[in-house]
Amino acid sequence: MPTLLFLPLVAGLISVITWWWVERIYRRPLKRLISHLDDLSISGQGERTADSQIIKGRLTERLAERIDLLNDTNQQLQEQAIKDPLTGLGNRRLLEQRLDIALPLSRRWMHAVSALMIDVDHFKDYNDLYGHQAGDDCLVEIANVLRDTFRRDTDIVVRLGGEEFLVVLLDTGEDEAMRLAEAMRGMLQAVGIEHQASGTADVVTVSIGVAITPSGVPVSLDDIIATADAGLYACKEAGRNQVLSRAVSRTDTLKNSAIA
Image 1 (cartoon, rainbow, N blue to C red):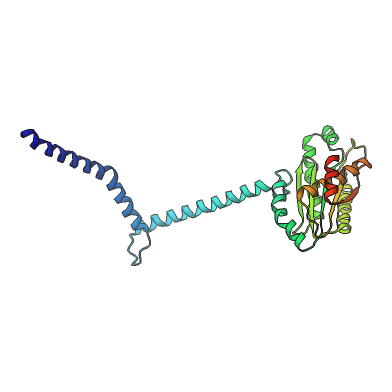
Image 2 (cartoon, rainbow, N blue to C red; image 1 turned 90 degrees about the vertical axis):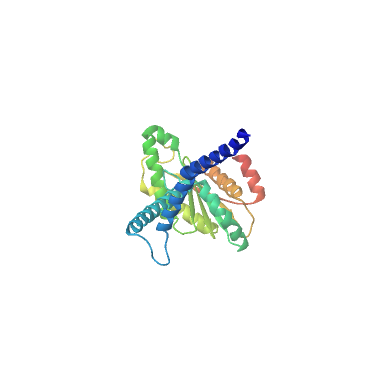
């Protein structure tokens, strides 16, 4: 009988201890946190202490700084993801992003699309003679010439890798594309970057293959690159430092892919 009376007392004591422990470890800190947040929140009646106003102001400033820093970092990461780190031109990812939108629109509006595949003549020999730093400087100078030549907002200028560059010209037919390609080639030659190891000229030159897409013809990025590559290959076979064009078609794409 005494044992039966003792058991409820023990259970009650355990309940009290458990409540005290939960209150001390969890509920009191949580209440203080809620109370502190209430003090910092905007009250319709403006009932805030001077200290809480100061704390809230500091927290707001730090939060704004963190948000600005996060936005800047995200923007930098996005730019790095679509830009070539050496030249500052776009990369393959930028090309794909823009053409995913531009090519269907150009086809719908029956606009011609042209592309220039640009390769530096004897660039390995240039690197071997002058060193890789000089090679990097040469590529940066070529990128500057590309920027000076292709200035429209719709012009897509990218470095594909190594000494290869690609320019996609929206709403541009063969005559204008060839004119711009010749202008770029001539401008670079006029810059006069010495190249004593070249078998083509005593300065750095480029070969350019131009792909021409007739108005309204459905083509893919692979079609354009393959056709421009074929024109570039023909330039090299013909002696380099020149511009040659090819029309994009499904038949040409298959043939030029085999050549490449």
